[in-house]
Image (tube, rainbow, N blue to C red; front, side):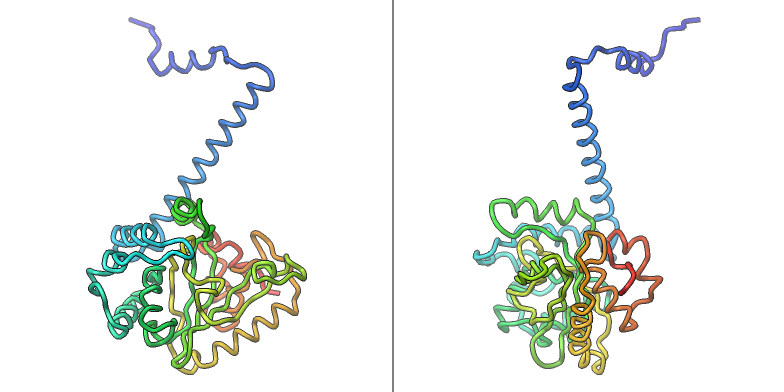
Length: 302
């Protein structure tokens, strides 16, 4: 009977006994580089898998096609949206040039179904029709938005906007209030420096401001896809939401917390506001999936 080793065994032995072309510190530098490259590849693969398998709605393939189209058409700051962007992304559902009523009905259906996209292409169309985001187009309610974080400027944004959305699973959360009358208002949290505040640049703070192209969390080229979830459309709660958010902003300023990469951060501030309003329980806020999707969301409130 032949005792010849199997091909896999021979290959393993060859690798074990092979002479490395480099010696000393160069050899270990190459090994360390290979290990780092492997870790980055594994990290990207895990994030890509999570991005394509969670929070995808009832038709993940259609959702992915929509995302890719939006990312393709989303222009850098200062450049106009392509005339073919809206017909390509939404033409099948809304036609090439829908009016405000049609967009409102479409977004109402989307909000009723659960998590939906409010993207750069859609808000560009709404601004062209109405000049601002309000209840004429986006149904009145309180929403939680989440988007990837990435640079907006050239020359990197045409590539980084795809990488940030698919190879980085974590998201930055904010709260959007659309009152029955008046402009939509956003509650955004971050470092003082991100809001142009020079004093204590690393302090965690919040901004309550109209949801305009100048707002911190408005859809842009580097943050073109916003996943929205409507928390409530009760008229009484919506009417008092902006004042409640201003109170949360004041309390956050009084706490004088230092911003942390994992916590406390912008997601922590949003999670605490939602828990305080009874929109989410402490247990749900601390779930593992939310911890991966919005790091810091479940961290203890001050």
